Length: 124
Image (tube, helix red, strand yellow):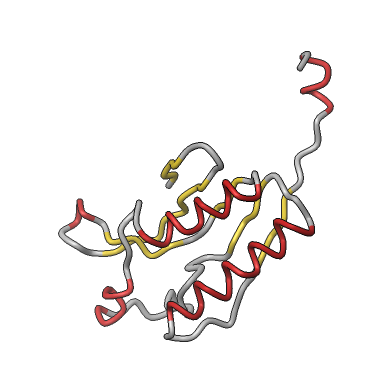
């Protein structure tokens, strides 16, 4: 593409607020993955932005040690599932996860990994 065409290109962004989530994390993830397919097939966005703590109930108000078992590695099974959807639909997916942080002895932190069709990258 020429520089002029790049300058005029529009980017389509879709936002999905997928709650309320329950403590049934697998069911939450499957429901959201189905919705990602629906959006990918009907809207064809360049970027799909998912909510904070995409697969979990909102735990931000009370950070309790009991929730740390829900923390996930990045990359890990959830990021791989969303990477497959990104590749399938040719879009970049940004999802909020509760990351199991290896640098802090297993404590967790909120992270937004980016899943793109050809790359797997981690943004904070």
